[in-house]
Image (cartoon, rainbow, N blue to C red; front, side, top):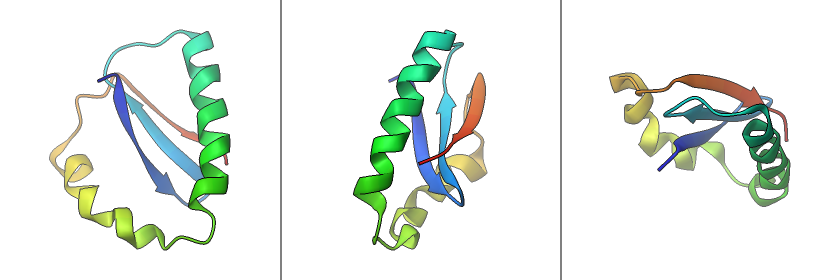
Length: 68
């Protein structure tokens, strides 16, 4: 597993568990943009059941908010 993501206001918060290249982040940004279509019209609170991962602290090397 390379990381995790969750929907947030303005896009997708992606947290990588190890350093990624600029090209990797470009690919993740493209995936985040396509998630906008998938998540549109869905209640983002459904994903709140996973918030405990972030509360406990993720072993993230880097976190970015990527727009839909």
